[in-house]
Image (tube, rainbow, N blue to C red; front, side, top):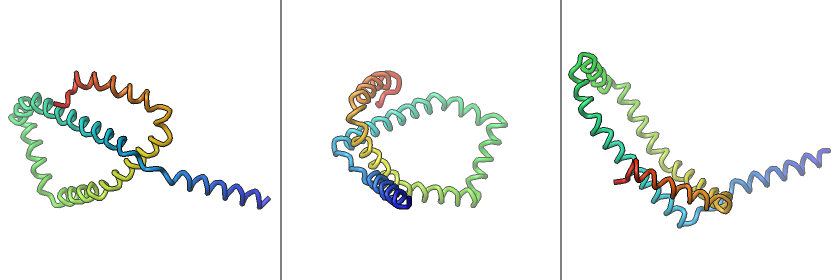
Amino acid sequence: MNAKYAVALILALQVSLSLCELPAPSQELVEKYDEMRTTFYKRLLNAYGRLQAAAAPLVERVGDSERGQAARDYIEDLQTKPEFQAFVKVATGLGQEAGPLADKARTTALGAYEHYLRPYVGVQLGEFIDNLKVYLDKFMPAE
């Protein structure tokens, strides 16, 4: 009975170790991903600029009201507090520390996708993304 448990444990460890060794993604996949990510960020920045331009007159009118002035005073007071400044410093440090971890996770996920999923769903996903780009170019252009 103990031998069965030992064999089961050894097999489980081999499986878990084989899952930890994910292959690196190909350069072509990384370049394609980076291109899509850059285009998506351009789309978001363009949409944000359009939203900001549309909301600017509304924001100016809100600043004239009594509530808007109270909110502006509260935000200015909050920014001068040392607790808020410490929070901003900690959040900035965490963001800088998380950057390399996010890159490693992204690379691992791309490698797992390319090795395990791309042979099965790569063509359909590519077609879906190409079809989605048509609508994104229409409603949320990159430029």
